[in-house]
View (cartoon, rainbow, N blue to C red):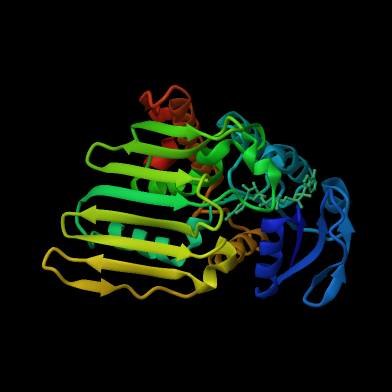
Length: 343
Ligand SMILES: NC(=O)c1ccc[n+]([C@@H]2O[C@H](COP(=O)([O-])OP(=O)(O)OC[C@H]3O[C@@H](n4cnc5c(N)ncnc54)[C@H](O)[C@@H]3O)[C@@H](O)[C@H]2O)c1
């Protein structure tokens, strides 16, 4: 049995708490939050609530933590959890900048603890299936990739609008698609991002180009959609022998995902179209199951290793720099993203 603690019981903390209820071999034994969340139950039983991470990290028998505090607190929490010897699942994005992520990875290595960043698309059945099909050559050489992720600002956390706390839309939202494309194609040689500034100063509607020798990649992300806009994400991969498209469209937030229009289709050059069958598993449950198996056993993450997540952070930093200077092309140095190139 893995004894798991959750630090930060907001939107994602509660998502992990709900996912853990469905998993065998996992027990959420306590949570921590700076604001009093009231009584918290796991499988119907009350569990202790600490006012800060340090109290939770001293909880007897605790084996692992899910870190779900706002992004600007990730480094502080990961450092404390690593020093306490716990296995760590840290919400995406890794940190505010790659330099912070590099320090966090180093501290996990020094203390010899497992660290995994919760890049959930690596566990999202449709994205996983699309990647399997592309990498097995199903659609031939990949020529173009388009991805999109369009939402209104999260209604539950004011910190999302402050770029010094969230990193803005490239880091907070587009990181999902940048991570997935890097997982699909490896690291790009160069990037270019342009965007529109919100009143807060954050660049919160962005168009990003990731440049590969044989493939054009274009990704759009926004937090600046009007109130009530359906959360929309998707990806289209066009190859010499067909096009795969995944569309996810839900009125409201991603938490309504069970009611989403949610389909992966393959279009062939001969005019045929096939709906691809995909597991109905919940991606957040899959992700937590994978992390808990690693934390309970003696393994290290291979689906989402922190070295790759650090490489992705370097790509994200380059996109943010590009957007700050209105779309200047930024090269991505090979030695900075070595783990991604060989994935
Ligand atoms: N994977 C996804 O789909 C996804 C979706 C949303 C958010 N996120 C990420 O998850 C993280 C958390 O986002 P959220 O939406 O849950 O935010 P949130 O604001 O809903 O929750 C954060 C919680 O952390 C608590 N907190 C703040 N400071 C704390 C501290 N020092 N110690 C303990 N608790 C503290 C807050 O009181 C709050 O309850 C962010 O990094 C965000 O980018 C991921």
